[in-house]
Length: 577
Image (cartoon, rainbow, N blue to C red; front, side, top):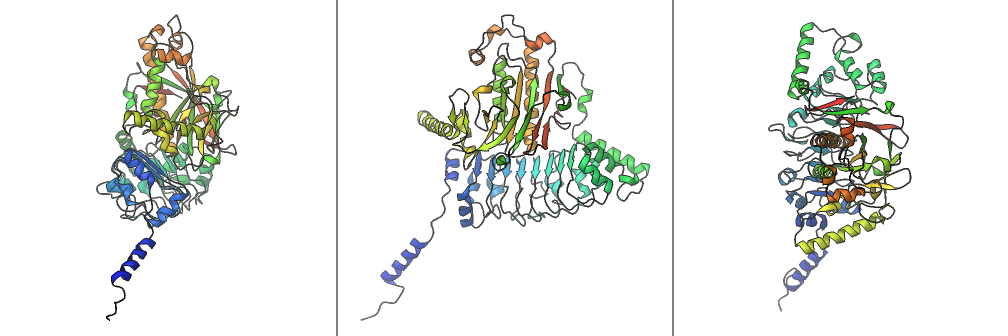
């Protein structure tokens, strides 16, 4: 009888079937399926399961992620197996506004390079293992520019020896205002830094810099620099970076240091100084600075800043380290002089906040606003994070509930909404639930009584709800993206409040015409006189009180508004400091 050849016939088929059965099944990505099904614009990937799935994908993000062209916000954080984003990001995510890839293992370069990403505004690559970002393995092409809309770049906590050489060409438009590269291995700062005409904040602390180029003083909008933790050879400059304001540091650099000249201390002739002055003036004109001086004072919105030193009882916010991996950035401010009593003033204010959430805050993915009745706020405040089962809040319009149960309630409501409307689009708070996906703890703001008054990005507390009688407000802006994002959103909010107040006074709405919703919110009858507090005062000026944000040891993290804040481009705004 003929023998059967091994590997053929039934035994061969059985072996193939066994091999196929032994092959690992492709990893499931339910987050991607959900984002695709609901046409989401925001996506957060984090948590312990992410590490295993990325490792199975070869240390890259899954290709399916790059088939979600509607994404505006993408965050992948805390994944030690993510070594590179993978090909297809630039082509597949053309509408991306914010890209957060912090605390991963990206490095030593980026291959392929990230760009072109024509709509990207915020890029956070902090806490990785990047050593260099040369052309072809960096942020994007220089020709044509790969990141033309970039405003905030965070490269802190890597192993970089130098900043990207083509940064000014990759992001050529005068938009990049925040650059952070702290805790790296930078040995030199190129004079080309002066080409970043809109740069406002520069953090290069804890590097290996020995000199700071004098050209840095040519950045026309630069207001905050941090060179602490470097071993500068100029001893006087070394002392200044630890104890002097940015303005003094830039003036010292502009004069060329101790020798009165530039670079090595040699004096320059009047021709070079005049050329440098012309360059500064040209950059100011290109960035639009100074145009407001030509506008007539009449009809302006007035904002008066009350400094901490002038305030007998300033409000402070202490930040707990627990928020670092959840939602680390917060800015606060107090605004006095709002008049929400007449007509639809309260409704206009609440509607404007909703619009800011949609636009500037990018549907709360970039930042979240919370406004409180200052009379109900008991300071000092604590910004912390708690497990969902330990966080209790009285949400707006609801009874006290644990965050875990509130999220579950909202999820059930969202499912019921889908069934009734037979569509995937959600409204109200339900749209923001995905921002909590994968979080082991939730951020919250706690007052001195121990009550949670804010649970971003979901809701505020009924305790500090804004009413028609509210005239003094505490404002907070939180973000997972950057501190500069918080400040930009706060600027927009304060400006909008000033516009609403001015409109209310000039139109003199009758309080009896107030809308039912606003009356219900206030719980009080309208003022029979119809006169508003702002009208009685005869001014639309708002007072903006500084609020300090401190770390756990009481050291200052940020104060708002600082000298660099409220530098509003609107020519009809006057800020009195």
